[in-house]
Length: 222
Image (cartoon, rainbow, N blue to C red; front, side):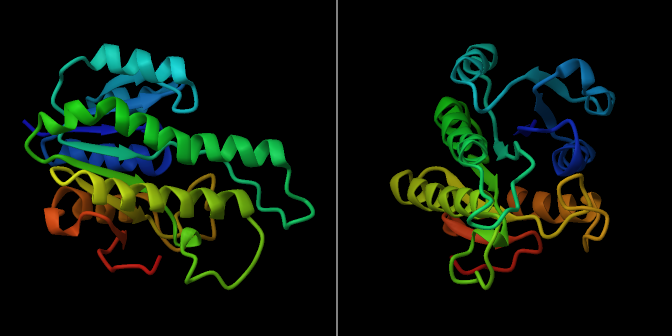
């Protein structure tokens, strides 16, 4: 049985990915900061785990709770609503909070669960990134914390792929999605984005490790 672990799985893209994985026959472990509020996730049949990627104590507790459970696919999806301000309006406390969730969170989770991933068959770690983390593709300002955090996590996935050759590491852009963060005017529904993400991640070949891919499989520039 394939096991997929998803952070921030109680809403938005994370919840939609969880549904895709369960429909495909995967065992899903999904995290939420407040498990009591993860009603939809639990109703899907997922195992719900309390977790806050920005909290070191929570990371250690997660590692202890999961023990030696093999995990085929890890999807780092935990999110925080970003500050879209320009340079002068950027709040540096919010900047640091964004980096904790989007950068510290994925490296902490991946390090904590690396043994679980290596014990599985698929051995895949994916982090939800964004085209706004593409340095080559940047043509506007603003959203400094979000842009910087996504560029940083792209580097993490690339560097992990260079260091660890028995695990597939991917950075995946979900597209502009109709979530609380993306807004109602976004181009994609969570279901369409999640279907693409799940297909990319669940079928990734080892030679793709270290790539930055769109939800439809197209390769993006760093």
